[in-house]
Amino acid sequence: MIKIENLVKAFGAKRAVDGVSFAVERGEVLGFLGPNGAGKSTTMRMITGFIPPTSGRVTVGGHDVAEAPLEAKRLIGYLPEAAPSYPDMTVQGFLAFAAEMRGLDGAAREQAVGRAVERCFLASVLHQSIDTLSKGYKHRTCLAQALIHDPDVLILDEPTDGLDPNQKHEVRNLIRELGKSKAVVFSTHILEEVDAACTRAIIIDRGRIVANGTPAELRAMSTYAGAVTVQFQGAATQPASQRIAEKLAQLGKVEAVVDGALRVYPQAKGAAGDLARAVVELAGREGWRLEALRTEEGQLDEVFRRITLPDTVKR
Image (cartoon, rainbow, N blue to C red):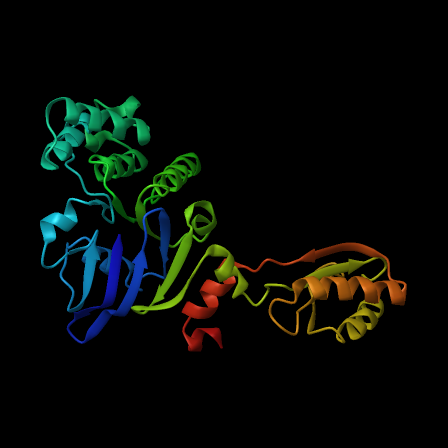
């Protein structure tokens, strides 16, 4: 549904987006992650045709966004950054206007507005003017206009920005549900949303893609992935902990965690099950009594920091 080929956007000497390529299929929810200024919003604006690329190509539903913009844009629902709207309109009036601009009228328009209101939980504020709404309701109103024509492609820039925890939960569930039949791209800097809503995620940094995979694949890139955290009875004292650590070092790198717990890192990726078994076997031979053992899945925030922080900051 979306195909991006070698996309570049330069603002003077600065390349905000630098050779980005990826595709999104129907039934996929792609999380677009990156630090502030990484190029997320610029990329999404080029996908929607809001700004032209310096070079490269974007197609939506087989239509080139530059050469056939109307055909491509008919397929897109777009929630821009900061959720712009008309503050003097009521929620109902704004959504009716958005539906009319999408070519809907009469009963089709009423049905579209009703569907969007239900999906975005706006019934309680339907007759309020937008300037009287909270930030969260303003954002949900703008999300509703993106859904008004039931598009095949959704481009959502920070769709949970300004929402309280309950509203975030509702919107993530909605995105996951919509993603079953549409192609969805949404940008975020909230890593928990990758697990909550995404089937795949891309991390972009300084205009370039630095990681691309499922949430599980990204977690597997973590330094902690496959490590075994273990705690033994009576190992809280320094001498005992040190003796145990020296023995565990036969299995891999060892570091102290808290309260006498130790973390053992596998010598090779994908060896987590073997490492946990080896720790248990070593404990049996040495007569150590296990209190706790946990195999780590890997941490998305650690992956994100490691691949996006400048080298000067890492040091």
